Length: 308
Image (cartoon, rainbow, N blue to C red):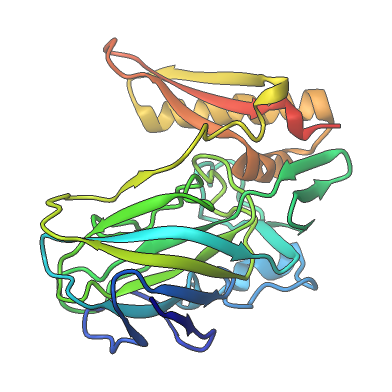
């Protein structure tokens, strides 16, 4: 087994199977990816809401890599075991005009900085989230030639933003080209299921992974495994949930979120834009019912443990 590092300057802004590998590894090797934040340093501690719209979207979600996995062929699965994420101490959350689940409700930019350590994320006085780090973007190169946007997730992974891919999780990605070409980025200190405003606690981190290989795995899309409950870090004080109900899952999700923003404002005194960003980093969207047509139910779960 070997240990190798992908350095911060070795990153790309998209998926392209013609990118030259930054590293070649054997199954069982460990790799540390030095990941930049999702803005590639465009947002800093000095950023104000007025600065938010100037974000250059051609330079968002940089991914470190790619890594060529020896022996990986189409039909196999590259395995990624998350060993550790080394914190940098602060992160940002932004509501970017035109982006996010409720973009039509929040046309004005907003920006928020959180400090964090190995245990907790300090969102606001009286609002503390558990530190639960993960890489939002973990993926292989697609078989289709050319440069592809980093923003949408794909069958080979990518910007999946699965907050449960934290330390101890094991992810399998379907290989479409020889070597797979694994890249990693978009590191977060905390996130709710849905990342509803479009950003989490965005932060630079070093991500340490063990890379494995399953021959002839035959999976079509990413699959993952985790040990223990995905919500045990906030379960102890229960939840408050709002719902959206209707024939369109997206609209139901929006309605559940709108009601949650109202609830947070009423109960905890947060103005709407800050409540929206809090939902993105702490509230979990869940499909509660999808079979009783014509209406489906989406619920938004707010953990009470983050307050006080």
